[in-house]
Amino acid sequence: MLKTSKTRPFPTIPNPTDRVRVVRKIDGMAGIARELKRSGKRIGLVPTMGFLHEGHLSLMKCARPKCDILIVSIYVNPTQFSPGEDLSGYPRDFERDEALCERVGVDIIFYPPDTEMYPDGFQTEVSVKELSRNLCGKSRPTHFDGVTTVVAKLFNIVLPDIAVFGRKDAQQAAIIRRMVLDMNFPVEIIVSPIVREPDGLAMSSRNKYLSTEERRAAPVLHESLRMAKSAIESGKYAFPGPVIEMMKDRIIGSGPFEIDYIEIVNPDDLSTVEKFESGGEVLIALAVKIGGTRLIDNIEIGT
Image (cartoon, rainbow, N blue to C red; front, side, top):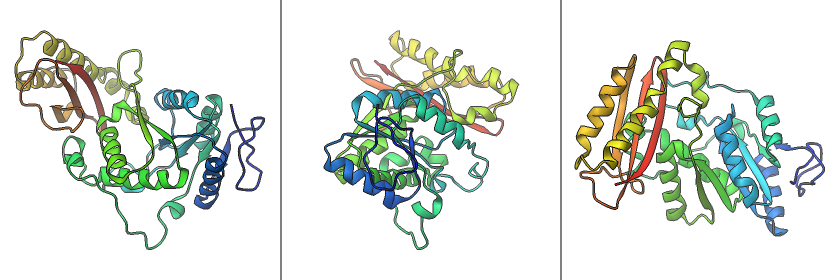
């Protein structure tokens, strides 16, 4: 495992005897990345917004054996928050995040301030148009443009050979893959499985917002996905409509939920599935609000 001191001048290749290194400046991170590339090191990147949990750590553990140098970015990206969303209240705990990164063998944490990522005069946006319009894009129309813009910047700064994203954000993963293909980024995108709590709730930094009652009800989201999976695999349903209605009934009957969407789509291009075809694959994706918290989850199955 390769780690570095926080006190050495930039740029320098990490030393295996030291602690995880924190880099705050783009020039510093880019200098390190260029030197690592010149020395033939394979760079892995896990982009995060911090307040790390086991889901994030699973991405790092996935990346660790696939690279020489593992870099985690921690940046609460303002451009992916819509007006009225929880930017100012988004949970942050950098000291804890740093300790967790060190525990799983991260070499460098890239932890830039807003003034580095979006300096005065910044006006460029990266948009993956079609894939950003459905699912979460319907209720959060600017969200994915913020995601692709910041991820494109991270790719240019960190120069990763691989980047690992979570399957819980299935739409995001599909969009990033499309961006990499369209823009010719030399990055391999790896999508790591969803990590769940023992009761099935997908791990998320936003789970901390749930009240005791809301947290008790929240596992119904995964239950409804499993129910839909069983229904589709039974072969009794030719069309998605009845399966979606079954899921809605199960969720609404279990607590004070407000359904943003439940959709069954093609996992590659996120197009709506009109009919189940034998031998195909579908993604069942949902977004549901409970109290003031918006939760997403999904499951991919064969038909």
